[in-house]
Each structure stands twice: as C-alpha cells, then as structure tokens.
Length: 593
Image (cartoon, rainbow, N blue to C red):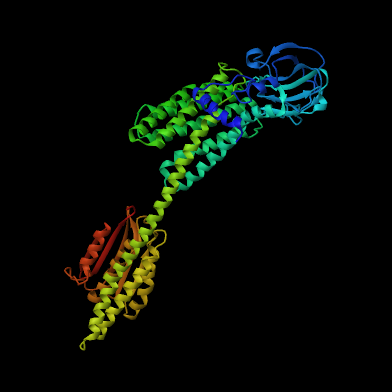
C-alpha cells in the first residue's frame, strides 16, 4: 500500500467522526507533503465570461475567486459560461505536468491554449437532451507538454450550471503528474469508488438476507430497507433523462423511504415500545414525500429539497439511541457496532446538509457515502453470520428429524405390523389354528405395512391421495366379500399441520373402523365420506350392519379404545354411533393445527 494511503486512512477517519471538511482545492491531509505543495501551482482566480461559444472567447470578463459558488453569486442563473485562467511559464515544462480539479458542477470542458483536453462532455442542446452531470467526480488530466509555451498560457473551463443544483468551479492545481495523481486518487477513491463498493455490499447483504429470511416473513421490513438502499444507489449512479431538479427530488423521495424502513427495522430490533414514535415516524415520512412530490410537480425541485428532511434526520437518532441502549444492556457487541455506525452515517449525512446550507465551503467533500460504509460492513457481517448459523442449525435439525422419523417408523412397525406377525406366528405353531384367523392376522399386518408406506408419501399436506390409496386396496377385498364400497369425497383444503405420523394415525382410525365393521357388523354396504363442515374436515365411515357393541375393545391398542387413543393424541374429535341401522365413525379434523 502506498504511504499516502496509510497516512490518509487515519486522517479520513478523524475527519468523518468530527464531520470536518478539507479546505477547497488543497490536500485534505499531509499527503504529498510540503514538497508536493511547492511543486504545484494553485490557480484560484479567473475571469468569468457569460458566453455559449464552443471555443474560448477572446473578450474579457469580471474577475472572480475560486472556488466560485453560483448559488451565492448568481443564484437564479442556469446556462453555460467560461472561466479563463492565465498563468506564466518561463519555459515549457521539462517533466509531465497534470491538472487536478477537485470539483465542478454540473459539467465542464477544460481547454489549454485553445486545445480541448476532455472531449465527450454532454451539455444541454437544442434537441432538449439534458446535460449529463459529471457526478462530482474529481478531474485529473495529464497535460501534453507540446501544448505549453514560454510566457503567457491560458487555461479555460467551459462550464454548464443549473440553478436547481449547487453549481460552480473549484480552484485548479497544476503540477507534477504523480503528485497530483495522488491527490486526485484520494478524492476519487472516496467520492466515486465508495458508492460502487456500497452497491456491491448492499446487494451482498440483500442476498444473505433473502437466503436467511426466505421462510421468515416477519423481517420483511429489513428486506424492503435493503431494496430501497439499492434503489437509492442506482438513482445516484444512473443517468436519468429528466431535469436535474426532478432527479434530486426523486433521490430525496427514494432515500427518505430507505431511511424510514431502516428506522422501523432498528426500532423493532431494539425491542423498545414508544407509543409516540411509530406514528410520528410514519407521518413525518409521508409528509416529507408529499412535500417533495409537490415541489417536483410545480417544477421547483432543487437540491435544497434535501433540507426538508432535516426533521427526519433528527428523528433517526431515536432508534439509534434505543439500539445503543439495548446493546449496552445486553452486552451485545453487534448491536453496539450497528448503532454506532448508524450514528456515524447520520452525522455524515448532516455534514452534507451543511454544505447545501452554505455553512461549509462549496467544494467541500461530502462524507455521506463514506459514512455509510461502516454501517454496510456491520450489516453484511450480521446477516452473513446469521445465515451461517441458520444453515448449521438447519443441518442439525434435518439430521435430528431423520433420526426421529426412523425411530417413529420402527416404532410403528413394532406396534402395528410386528404385533400382528407375532400373533400370526403363534397361531401358525398351534395345530388347532383356524386357517381363516391366521390369514386375517397376516392380512392385517400387510395392511398396516401399506399404511406406513402410504403415510410416508404425504405430499403438500393433502389427505385425499392417502385415502384414495386405501380405497384402491380395500375395494377388491370388499367386492370379493359382496360388500359395496361407496366413496363420497369433496375438495378439502390442505391441512398444514399434517405429518407422516399424524397421517398414519388417521389412516389407522379409518382402517380400524372398516375392520370392525367387517368383523362384527356383517354389512352389505360401507360408505366413506370426506367433506368440509364449518372450520373442520369430516372423515366419516358408515355401514348398514347390525351395529357394534359399544364396549368392544381388542388387545394391542385396537378397537374403539385404540381409535379414541389415537384421536386424543392427534388432538382431534372422534364420535362413534352404533345401533340397529348400522355404525357410524366420524373424525373431525380442524383446518388449522
């Protein structure tokens, strides 16, 4: 790293914290040192000429000091003028010279002895194409040695300004190319590169946040804040084909919305509850946006529209203070860092407002983008850490879920199919066993195995496909017994609480109701009905047999006792009604668990 960057880093940090601004046209730090200052020439006086000529005019104009602030000297003027700066050289330079211009607004061409140095600058034209602002980028040009001459030389700047923006020209430095390049690069780094770095950081924060909060809709306000931040940066970096005043108004609106979202997010994050703050924040934000929109519609929007947001800037200190208090009380380094960097950002924004108010020199460096940099670093660290923790927790939960599901399946097989197979094995070893009874136990164990397999095929919390599979297997068996199976199913909503375990319990209740009817009721018809009733889904199994005994309970958690036990575990309602006209078993499942 170059020595000047190391020295400048400390000075930049102190300047940001104190909201100080380097003097116009001078090095804002000891960088370059006295040697560089002696080797450079400061041009701080110029002739000001009203002219739209495409080449430097020959006539003279009034002498003005640089930096020249149009808002103070000619506040209502919009158009093109010339600055002519004369300097003397005893002889052409023996080493490459360069020009360094810290700030010009809105756009300008630089000429040396009648030769254009920076072609391609776009001004307003007769076709109505708007001037393309040079986005406060410092200007650095290596000057061809052949353009200099012995004696008098002339540097001219053709500048277009606009009354809607703070327009004017800084003092100009001529000197050794390397020394001025160092000065230019310091300002270019902070004033041009940093906004692009912020764009990348905010986009990265948004990616981490979306990944982290994909299923957590409660923090949508932070997502909105980051999207607004992205829109704000794009509004600054993009070339909008609208008048300059309207551009500033649009930026004020987008930026105010971004700060509103960040304030809401910070207020929620601190956990405090001030009844007066949310209405005041929402109302002030709405009033600010409406006021700026009114100025835009009336064609009176300028960069002074930012001053309307002064109350909003002061109000931002409330969530910052609350966040700092929360971090201090909980000893949270992250919350403290978040609040302090937000405070630095707010102070840097206030410094930019002081420039617009003419309380600081016209060509002062604006620290607002640099002030946002620490906050963005803390934000991206916070969300990256939360994303990693969430991913690790998700993997742990997934492994635990797999282990629990394996244990459940094994337990289901042991309690259901396993018990039936053990009973079938005992019957098979007895010489007096009824083959029909043995076949029934084997058939029930197979049915239980199919139910376990079906429950694992649960898709989108939909119960109907599982009941359809059960019907597909039962219908041939019932037809062979001469029993008609009636199927009456209406569309039902997804049951979001339904899991493979709960689905298996529901299927077992339905199967047990059918088995009981087959074994004890001697029906000629079994009807399965599924339909929504009120805020519940009814699953009903009815037969036309002679009715079940109400105290029928069979071993192995089967029969009525097993059905009621499963319904109770699920937290659903089960009714059983029996009589001479048949038996009805109804299960009522709520829409929401």
